[in-house]
Length: 192
Image 1 (cartoon, one colour):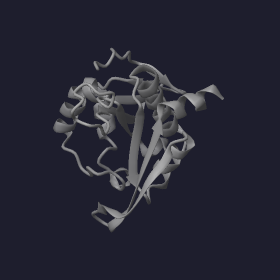
Image 2: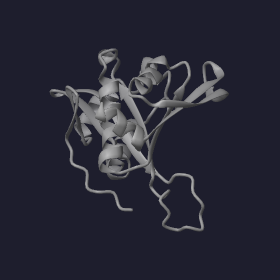
Image 3: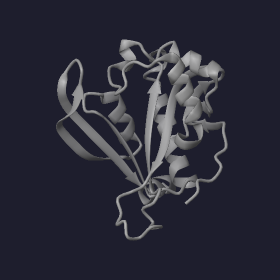
Image 4: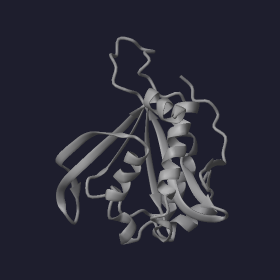
């Protein structure tokens, strides 16, 4: 299954999601490595040059975008396609490229305004309506209340509460959550 060409920019509520540029990534790097941002990230510190390189390369494979409010960078987001679980003897089974994962990050100066919800909603729409995936997943540390509240606002289902399954450098072993939504659940929510 080949992914269709995705058009950027695209709206996300009051925001606009755009492909990253070196300039927009420079804005992201102003806050990306701050401790108040990295508290809940798996990759806590990034090398600026490598970060720019990876984000500019990942546009097609991971649908990596920068979120703008007018001309101000307020966050980043990524959507990546994976195979679902399926029996391997069916080489072109429907499980191939049937799942997407999403992730998002907001500049702390813009936190608490619903932007992460708008961004994640736009990613779900892209995954289900344009890319035609069967299922979208997202995960977070259980203590990252802001992140799991976004997923729950969007109707994603908590499928796993892993007990001390996630390593945090400052807190040790802590709980993790995994969320998911099926295409038919997305369609039902949109029909309301």
